[in-house]
Picture 1 (cartoon, rainbow, N blue to C red):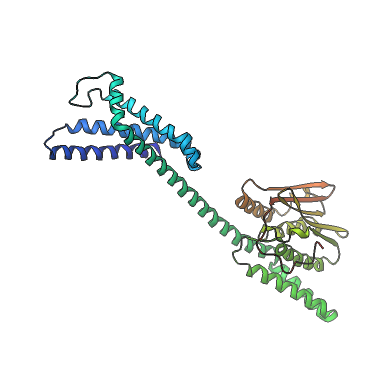
Picture 2 (picture 1 turned 90 degrees about the horizontal axis):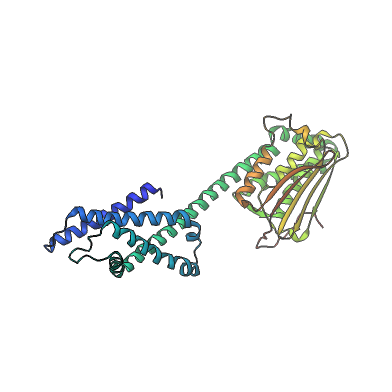
Length: 365
């Protein structure tokens, strides 16, 4: 829709109509100078091209969102006005047309031309209108297609990044060593930890390309992850999960909480020797789902000079996916609510799964 291409295409279309009329007139032994026809048709379609491009430039949102009522109350009067304006300009350039008639004053020629051309001009206007509307539909379709492709890529990257953050070789090595040690003293505990590890891997890998899941599934994943962290930190951290039972079927993006919890351990809880506290909450406020992750530790500022190579990767991923899923209909904030206590708050539109949760996880009761 660049103006040069748009106007050039309109003039080319006018030239084709001029050639058609010229060949038709010669077949009927009615000779009209080709230059006159090219000028008349070229100027006419140049004017239409310029007017239509101005309409596209100024009224594109109204065209894309036009309803039958808007078309009747706004665009129908506009089509008449544009048709008249085009004829008023055109007859200034060609005062000797129509040929074969005595000279007429400006307004008589305008009425004469409108009598024969108004319907044709209206057809041109509405053809351009529906062309623009079709282009708008196509652009929105392509934007949605590109957004879906980007979301798919982001989801795969988030899953792989979560696997690297949660189950990196060092973490797996320590976990398997812990299981091996427990086998000599507490077989039941070792079996439970191994089961939790396998379930964590299985859930992560089997979710496939799902972009949204019920909150109950996300919290079950977080619950298993916290259970493993609890064994890893040997009682140094007290964990609390507070979830409104009415929100079990609320839709949330896949793996939206785990990177936040991982960040809380990596930058806060891992640095305390005792009495650490992690709280994961889910509640509803008006038509919004509110997710809060609060942790004690060393506050926000000690994070900045450390882990320069990879700091913020998980949170940046969460922010990007929230932006792509919800646009401006979400909020994400991280703040130090009191001394050495950090809180991440995420609000999302409250949407529910069509299926009820059959086996809710062990939280929020």
